[in-house]
Length: 260
Image (cartoon, rainbow, N blue to C red):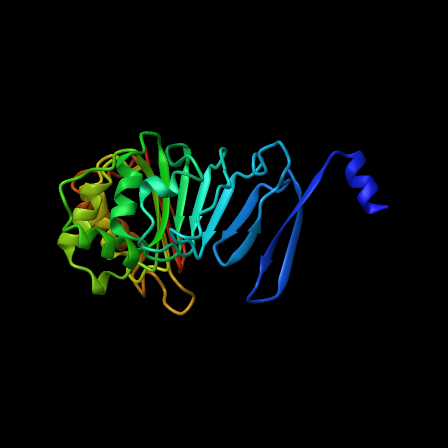
């Protein structure tokens, strides 16, 4: 009955076999979900259907990808690319075989990737793009390239996790601002200090939105009074903040700033 129903619907069935966990993943073609996990450790059985299997996929998650595991699957409509793990032997051209890198709108990097691949993705990307990455991974990639004199002006949103001011040098933060000069939204989660805010405001002249949060174990502003914090921010912002040109939301663990 199931086979007949699938035939009547003109649906095809393909599968992926995970030899490690002994799971069998079966799905219809074209794949109907908008998110797909592309795992290099799975055995991929390509569909014989005369359609593109992955037209509906908008978010692609890459996991355990190496030069040897890249197959002929095509993901032409990807808007969000999430990289869990990818080998250093994969370059821009090889990754571009399975998706159109120049069309992605958001890239999420869960683990440090090869700095050359990261730079190539951004250098060859002409559209507006958002980046979601851990602070230490981003800084490691930038340091490997020696903070070369490059600007990625198309990056309009940068979401950073686990920022640590005490482990950073002021010059590195300034260099980071120079690499992404056109940021419109900067989101810093699990940060350890609000004291980086004046440095960011001074060096990111076009930044209208800043959000910062910390963990529940460590208040962002310690015991400082709200008025004292605002006075310091205005004083140290290099003229970017004035008493009537910004709006803010502040709590024990979060701070959001919107600048007119």
